[in-house]
Image 1 (cartoon, helix red, strand yellow):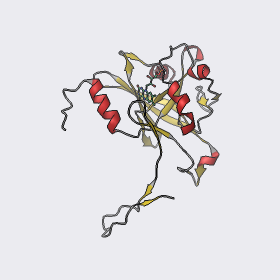
Image 2: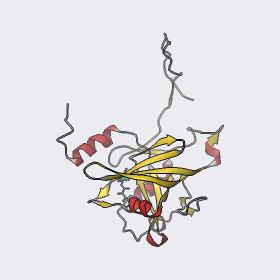
Image 3: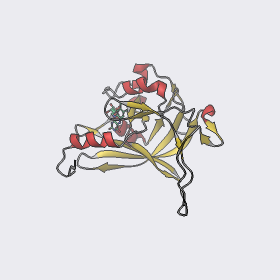
Image 4: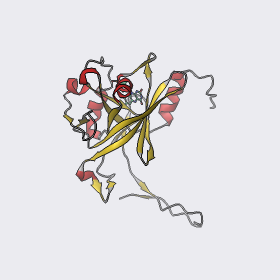
Length: 211
Ligand SMILES: Cc1cc2nc3c(=O)[nH]c(=O)nc-3n(C[C@H](O)[C@H](O)[C@H](O)COP(=O)(O)O)c2cc1C
């Protein structure tokens, strides 16, 4: 099947893209709304885009042309926290995606505990084992629907001690949840370890399961 992209409506293109670009990590973003209300919402259209300085990019779509609370808060306050989502918080994370009005705090409504940040005012989600305190770098409007691509510079990393070994995050202990298409989520499955790629390699070593 071949599908020219030009004639596709946004919903049709969305269905293909969220089915093909998987699994997606989830940025569970806390931001400060008017009057200091703490907003939380998940965004899986996200990645890191620089490591000096560390920068993440999160694509926040608009709701009927209007910015979502997260993008509006970040634009107004210039900061946010990216909380990662472990498997056991999938339900709470999913609930925060409901369309709450701007004057309702999702963490308060759902009983999610907050923890203070070090550098910025926006608090972290205490149950999340990895949090990035971020300052707004820029927001770009993308495409006809003007999706808001938010770039945030990470100014402080919070890593739960038991997840770190030799300066690296231990992938066996960190059990993140990823988003697939629609209502489906996935855990990390079997890991595969490869030798370094080399142009002179004459023999191909088979991939082996990581222990
Ligand atoms: C796992 C998951 C991932 C999501 N990813 C995105 C995303 O990448 N971009 C987006 O605009 N909305 C995404 N959403 C929907 C938002 O979370 C939802 O619109 C939310 O109500 C926005 O909250 P806010 O208005 O408080 O910012 C996602 C929802 C879920 C459950």
